[in-house]
Image (cartoon, rainbow, N blue to C red; front, side, top):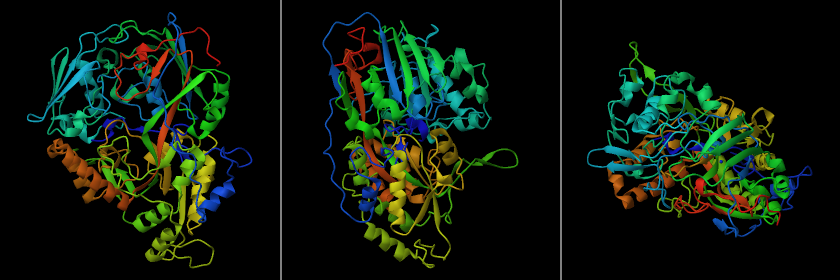
Length: 630
């Protein structure tokens, strides 16, 4: 199971970003030109915390409403204007099979359509365009479509379109990252991937509305949205004549995409804006709004845009600027815990492509291969770096209580699986120094920095993303914290990097990167093999162990249908992971949604019925022609 969960790489806008020194759906801290953040703490004061002073507790956690309903009669049609706050342009890949970055997921959601609805626990329900049945005894998954779901060009969405998505991902020329262990477990998929078969044996189109998928085995994760079953459709009639290797750049993907969502893409200005028009034949009902206009907004001007009442809805509003916009007249700020976390990753190996014999047969699948001699391979070094940084202070000072120190790679939203007994790595520079001393990292030449146990110079290259005013100060704070325990950590190339180029280098295992700061949108399935499994392309640390393999196997086994047993496996895995520490989970996060008072209803409650006014996109409506200013 791997990328199936629609894991998204968070962009480094102050709101959703890769923070830390910037974060990525991670983040950063905001300072003005004088080095003062929004709470009034200078960079020097933050560094004092790193030198051992106790950090302020900061604001208490904020309780948000998840729904707003404004009084007034709905106007006919109207255009809803959305400001998407980001410092990284969206790539414009309108395809669930091919996109990788969260910005593309943001702009796709109004048009492309998803098949299956979910409840408050992120489990499949019957509120979507299709239902899913998992037969544990036969390892058979059945996806059944409604008979009133149509593509934007009027063609019906069929079971063949669901089969087509699997054919794209499994194709030998597929260029994306979603050929996961889940896909590999479909009967006949490997033969299709290797070019040994023209079709996928385990996928059967029973009729226009019914698809059967035969797996080698099924697991409890398949009951979870994104938990192993690829529940998306692609328009076969529109895309099948395009070679799979060329799909990502095709105008049918980049310029004129069609979906089955509530709105149709009308115009795309690459990286900047998307215009959408109402799709009258949307299966849940004709949308109330006539149009949606989405524009990207730099994080540096987001608050000003809100003060000027420029948009009806803001997405990815910078939480590091919360105190500057929480009381702007004309808006209600909704919020919820985000399915995301920020982290610092250690580069521990490299991605190895599939190995073939002389006849072209695959002898070893593509996988993460750890390097025991990697610069960051010593777990004592990794743990010391975790103890050296004060993420409680980062969350409090830079995010006014909207971020908190992360203690696990499993987020608290997954309450049944999150191990709340784990303390993680609270700020403890004394313990950090002890670990380095015990491991033999000593300053042998008196320059203030520790050398390796072999006496060689140790310079750790740190890659972090640009985006928002806080990106630089947080990265500087982390580096200063590590210098305070004698580690010479320097920014890669002496600067922060733009979202897309950052990930290009991280994915390619750039040998100049030793550690990197990023963030993951987790999707709705807690199973972590898509980020930390041996065969997961998104496992950017390239960490893999036999013990971890065993945990992943248990999580995905049939025994996992015993939920209590599975939850205990998760708890034990988190203890193991946090001891091995291939990443430092840094911050759990909240996301906020400023909504203008002319929006009739807006609801971000997880699992809400999509036909509830304000919950489904098709139910949004306006109560005034003019944007409210108070």
